[in-house]
Structure formats: C-alpha cells, structure tokens
Image 1: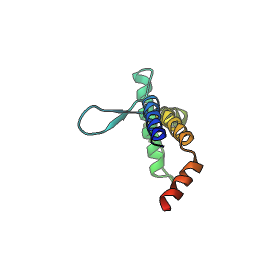
Image 2: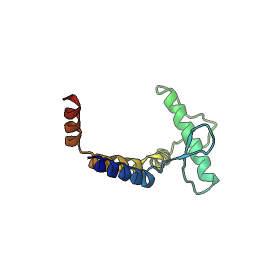
Image 3: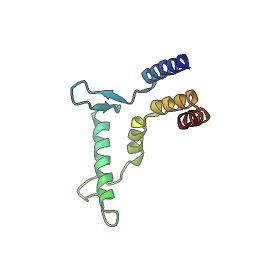
Image 4: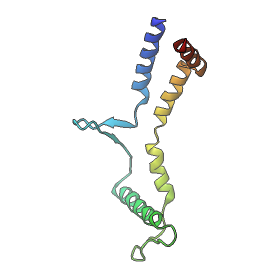
Length: 118
C-alpha cells in the first residue's frame, strides 16, 4: 500500500510540473504570482484597456450608464475581452484535476473513508 502512495505522489508531482502553467511565481518574497496575456502590439493592448474600462462603466450603472459621448468609438468589443478571459483560463490546471481524479477515483475515496471510520 505504501508503494502505491509513493507512486501516486510521484505521478502528481510529474503532472504538476506539466500542468500548472497559468500562474508563475513573481520571484520576490511577496509570495504572489503573475498571469500572462499575449498581445500583438501596443495598439491591441490599448484597445483591451479601453474596452475593459468601457465595459466597467456600463456595468457600474446597468440602468442608465453609457460610454461618454466624448469617446469616439463607444462600442464595446466584448469578443476582445472574452479573448483575454480565455487566455487567463487555467485549462492546464483543469487537466491536472482530471488526471488526479483518474488516479483517485471516487469509489476508492469512499473505501478510504470507510476504513478511517472503522
């Protein structure tokens, strides 16, 4: 039984190295992490920021908020915002959770709980 546990831990460590990619340690003593988004150029970055701000303006006052008329392009590029959300979505981490659930199926967890209760 002990050998199976060691193998499981080694498998989890290997999977962790392969799958935990969305957050990267900042490298200072704060213990914080950074998530990365990729943009083509400064113009796309500016467009993302402007669209986020416009979206927030409308979200703050759902009844009557509008993008100020002084802003030339008042439309909000929701697709651009959703593209950023997709970049930040931790799909590799979900793959890790899936692999762990395969290593530890629900039936075996119930058996472990029964052993502990007895």
